[in-house]
Length: 450
Image (cartoon, rainbow, N blue to C red; front, side, top):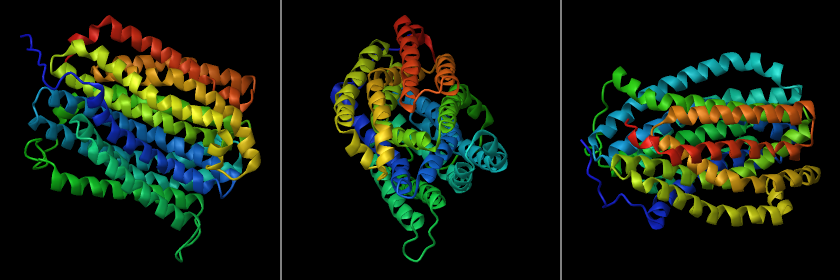
């Protein structure tokens, strides 16, 4: 039976998009400040600690992004049920996701604890960087239990377009991280000076605070009866399988993507400790515009799924393009300031003069890559929003294959300067953008049901 197309609430204007995206944007920027806080504090400890936190941070993220990928799949399903107005089914998706995430967190914690001491010595050339990175990872992996659960709460609020709470949650998490870092990295208030380990402990504790806040807010402010959240449901393997059919490819895709990013940092580490420190600083700066785009991409994915659920496939492409225009309006002025005042921006992350000078060319290169990253990221999330996460995975694999070959040649083989390493972003985003434009234009996704 052909669904009747509804016109009310299913045509998203620029105002609608900003209303939903703004809290996501603030929350993502606040979460980016978790890594920025670590970098800012460690940038005043030493070059080794700063570089090691890059290796360890990406190592942690590569595993975390599997859980995040599951959350994206759950968000797509909850958004589809929201668009179909089957609200009571959302709670079951949420609780099955929580059960899975807790199991995944335990598995990731134990696996990381076992393999990390055996893996890092073989891939990190500097013994100083290795020891500092291991110290960070040993404490950071406790955060899996909190960050994976927080992902499911975020998926619920984004999927049901109730995103205002994300801002408050993220502000509380960042402020907590600042206090924990100040206390533990430098040893204030009578506590020992823990250095890089203190940054890891602080980040994990901040994620714990975030989850506690989500639980309290959901209990007090959300209509739990409407969304089927009133009572936890029993574990249902059949429903989890349906969730994994959407989420699995996103999980593998995210892990593969971050694993390749980790490989990029390993290659750069072989160029020297300063090159690694430069890359870590630029990575943190690049995270600010990236999170702006990611907010619009996340919103676009949820709205695309809502539109399809409401039978308004004709509004998908115009909605995607509105997201791209809005993202450019914020990102272009931002990176323009980075390019015009690079030393001022870099000086906020480190007070080491030689490191600031070495990082300027890399920052300039990054600024130009946002012209491709902005539409590429939003269109890519839209492909996932159609429910075809397997196609998104294939696109990612092909693009990352080209990316990996490129960084191997220019870093490992030709050993170009670190600024040239950042041109690898061109290769990745050109491939992603071309694949996604072709997929959306063909329109086969209109018949996909989840």
